[in-house]
Image 1 (cartoon, helix red, strand yellow):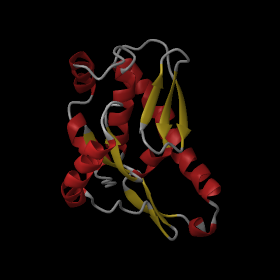
Image 2: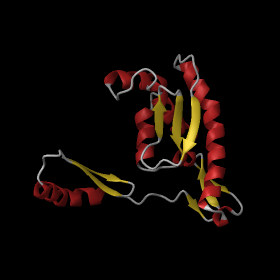
Image 3: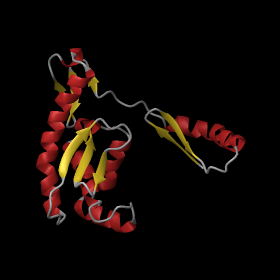
Image 4: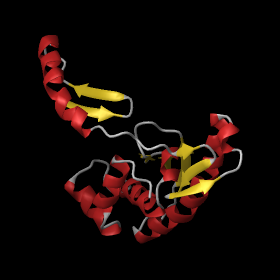
Length: 178
């Protein structure tokens, strides 16, 4: 069994045959350890100040916009950047046919590689991080062009393109925007 923190709370993974009482005891015993790990997620915006590419940017009237309009603004920033850097990383990694780039408001992942349809979906949440951190996600998703599973071969390919991947991964995990 395993227990981890997610964006909305705790997530417990247990085999289907596990007794409910055993799962409950496991969760109760693990809560103190998990509570020590929980840190508040920083706000991606405060009023009209928004974290964009690792810097606080003033967008006049941002706070008064609907969430949908705010997301449209952020999506334009991120999509523009991704359309610029994705082809660069594709060339660096020897990928001859370009992937289409999409941005969605994903809650649990930073990117999804769609091999058959030849596109990559990136999370809108990435717009708040520094460009180097975003590029580590681009490299990660493009490494799936060669290897689908997160195997040793996958990480060999990824680390060749992004040697500091683990450093950037920690920034993503801990929501360190700058």
